[in-house]
Length: 453
Image 1: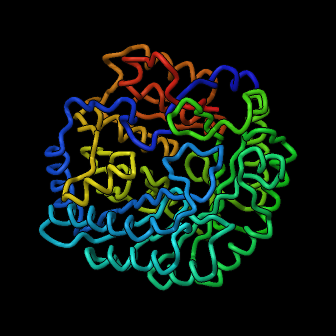
Image 2: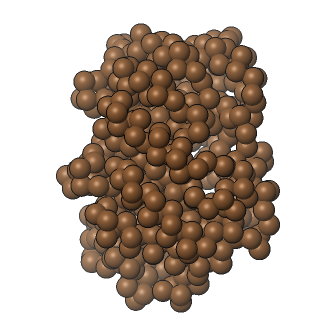
């Protein structure tokens, strides 16, 4: 495993989309193309599967220095109502494009810290959302909760509205690590938030754990995983820390490079954490995710409906996802679009009746084929094709890279398929890299992505 780690530890995307954002063709994108693709996707999918909504709530009271998300640090809660009104104004712009109310199958509140907002204000936001849309009977509605400030009132209020899933950012229970990343939260807070969620009726409670953090040891991972297993969350995201300090506005400066575990140590952290989770009854679901056999993600993996988009893994697919809020990304399947990243600019645009989109990408026929293969690899560790979908003819080196992975027993190749082996599952990002023809044709001059391991 040491040799494989050294060989395959290279910068690479996490493939929440294809093409990845740095490779969007922004010159050939327009707002009119985006609107047209939305309408096409809506006609194709709304009646049967509905749509997804991602709502970005960017505010945090303090900066976690491991975080690469777009956020606004403030203790001023007067920002809540104006921002909610901006979200609803933006949604009205989208709803006006369609000939009927969108049916919301999935909705996720991300951040930032969604529980920065008071329960009353979150209820106001959701009342506004569902006055403009229809909620599907089997809707999957979730939010990210901070264990330190997610109150029973938050949980009860959102459960009453229809929220059935919550994920808590745990990261690590070692105090030295928590100080380094400026995320101080004792186990007791996470336990209380988890117990409260179950008492409020949530059917899925998730914990996010990160390995590869500054000062983090293998013993820290053992302890964090064991403490997590005590609480039996329904699903666990066991992420590799993405060290991307070059991103503008990033807070990853609370520690030095030498404080990070070496790649070999980081890989052992993952393998030992995975071993403990599987021994405790969790099943590996896609990349970096584990779930109990009672959870919807497990059932989705079993029946082939597991999906992945900018919100992460989901138990079912929606072709159309609308992103609302500053920096949010939308996906019509045929196009991507991202909102402006500055809060004041975003609010000014929607206040004047303008879509706050500042860049995007319209997928080509080739993009759509490659997107399908990468999505299948990420969701089922397998993909297949017919001769007419041979995506490697133009760049023979791509197939050579896959054959090298086969020699290393990361994948099994047939004339019409690729299957990722058990050994290869931790390297699934690497398996996707050869499919990424935009990246293969134009290697970046500077580092754009975190390391794959």
